[in-house]
Length: 310
Length: 249
Image 1: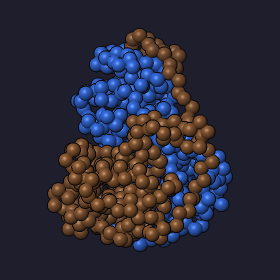
Image 2 (image 1 turned 90 degrees about the vertical axis):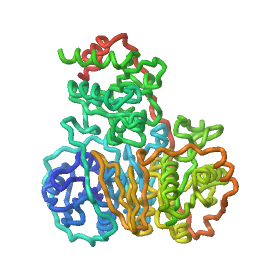
Image 3 (image 1 turned 180 degrees about the vertical axis):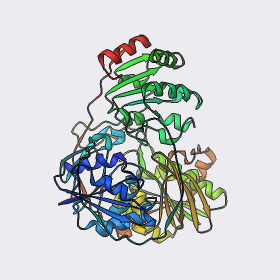
């Protein structure tokens, strides 16, 4: 049995969630191959080859894999899939986009967002915003799986797997990437940060998120937000932590002005230590917080900032 | 241009579900049900395209028992012209749902299918992509902006780290993300009108789709409960706890 991991990368470097997906694959006890499909992507392929546990890297280099568009990529994966027992990718927007298309083309089901591997065909996955954990067995000949990155500790580097160049598939011409606008920030990435500072509707405006930025910078933290803050237009959707946004599990999660709706808790309750600051002492967020401070955030956060600055 | 919008009846997203005491499933007795929030966004987008003169007809489709007529009536009140219920008793997997929708697409010949990106019960995030794959159509998932021009759609997608813009040929499948729009509140006159709009039923058998589950659910469990910690009096105490007790800063 061999598992194929679909690498997520920007042609130059591998996205860290791929190392978490490799970690999940190692639990299967299979041989592990990694597919790097891109355009001028040899640097990313070399990085994939260095990941611990990888036995071989397949590299498909063509212009029409440049943006990782699902249609061309799915066709390529499907043309190689019969050699594999498992196809895996991290449950990022990339993996979520591509793998279900692959599964449908192979006429197999998909197991989404796995949090544990119990056997090569048996996995634990969340449903209902993480309020139900289902243990499921896949009876399909090829298991197609997306992996919750925070549930598997990323593999390290130090491997030296061979890289095999494979022939690219056709350009289907169904979809074209016109532009990509990525947020550039000096702060750590939300899903990888050791500390996350998140704001909710209590912040009252996008302008007030500057307060959290200052706090985040003092702590070396990433900034997140609740769905309410995104819906209110305070911050981009990319900040969203929750059932329909990102799943985070930092060492320290500081929820500021967040009430603690079910769908938000789904995205952060794996955090090691949770701090909640909210002026409503009845807010549900306090039920999951290790340390709660019932206070006006517009007083508490500046106090925190100045105390940390000393 | 005809648009098909699949809508799912789910446990209201604000309800914290509990498992039945025997662990056989989620307790839905006396639990508030609603249209999946992302499907509401899909329905709203279709209604806006029709109001802008870009769509001629909207067909809402739901799959499940007769109770799913509720969400179909809600879709009709939001602006769908017709509704179709695919009658099914069992809880179906996304692959089967996608195959049933493919059969509907073959009948209806829409130029666009707008799906919610995920349902808030199963949280699978698969159906739209699977449908696009089965049809050989392009897919524009997690859309936050949708523009239709002759024979193509330009879609802004929410991706990790920011946004991207893709152009897809039509027909296509689009799945909705949060910021695409804010669904309207339906008015009483529209709810009354919706009662008179056609709602047809079709069985899984009539669509020629075989139901074959691929996943066996071995066990359902509730996650370990995170217990509440302590309340601190002020910022100084909070910082002291984080430094000395939790040792995280």
